[in-house]
Structure formats: structure tokens, C-alpha cells
Amino acid sequence: MAEKGMSRRNIRKAVVRQMEKDFNMERFDYKKLVRHGKGKSKLYGIATVIAIYTLGIGGAYFGWSRGFVPEDVMAKAIFIAMVPSSVIGSVVWLITDSRLEYPLRVELKLYIESIEGDAGLLWRYGPIAESLTIKKVDIPAVIALSKSGHAEDIDPQDYAEIVMSMYKEVEDSEGLQLSGENSKFLEEQLLNIKSVA
Image (cartoon, rainbow, N blue to C red; front, top):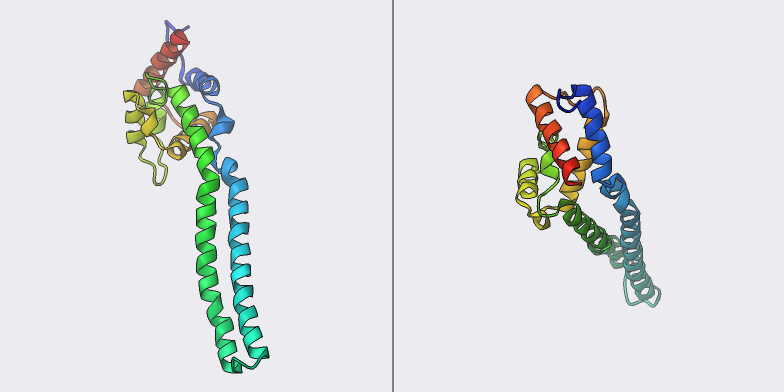
């Protein structure tokens, strides 16, 4: 059947099967992977805000109860304590978020480097990837890095978003419409991948 050429529908099915072989889709669901850490980092940020605000109010109350601080100063101190506690809590949240996400990014980067190898993999799905539009992702640059064998320079989050978007687009029968030229390119690349594997 490969000698005659595949129909577009069969190419779509073959691409889905090949993507499932080439990529571990669970490892590329980046939002799901970092969800646990995001909740934990927000909790650390909120706990920091509560601790600093409690210390500020506690100090103002102690001063007021001992007569060192007048009532109007205590009222201002309670209000003013909100600002630094919120800023420090936000900084703790952002730092904790990036620290919890870092090991996941490193693991994903190593996985990407292992599947890309020297010959690259993502570029073989180029017509599909280049038809996508993903905010803040330079798809042609990622495809070029994949083709040149520089997987270590690819941002793991961008790669994951491209793979997941491609998979959703190809899996949906109403989604991506392949032109004859793109179908031929994909068919050749799929045959090339199978012969290497």
C-alpha cells in the first residue's frame, strides 16, 4: 500500500499511531505535571503572608497593649503590614513555584534529548507543527533545532506544548487538513522512521 501512496485519512491514522510510538504523551502533559507543585507553592506564599502579617499585627498589638503605641498608629500599622507581607508572600510563591518546577523541566529535557537523538524527531512532523499557532512558542525555531540535532537547546515546555497540540490536532478527524504535498512528506517521513526503528 505504501507503493501506491496512502490516503489522507490513512496518513492521519498512521501519524497518530507513530506519535503514540515516538512520544510518551503522559510525559508531555506539562500543565498536569506541574499542577501539584503550583498548589503547593501558592500554599507556601499564603503561609508566608499570614506569618508576616501576624507578626506585624502582634507587634502592633503588643505595643498598643503596653501603652507604647497610640491607637491611630496601631491602626495604620495594621494596614501598612499588609503591603510588605503581600509582596514577600508573592516573592516566596514565585521562587517556590520555580524551584518545584525545575526538577520536572530537567527530567522532561533529558527525555526530549533521548528521543530526539542526533537525527531529530519533531521536525519529521513539521507540516503538522508548522500549521499550529501556540502563543509565545516559536514553532519554526523549535523545528529547526530538532532538525539540526540541537535538542539540548529546545525549551522543554515549548516542545511539550507543540507535541500535545499536534497530537490533539491529528487525533481530531475534523482538525488538521493535510494538503497533498504535506501528506506526501509525512508519508515519506513515517516510512523513514519505521525503517530506522
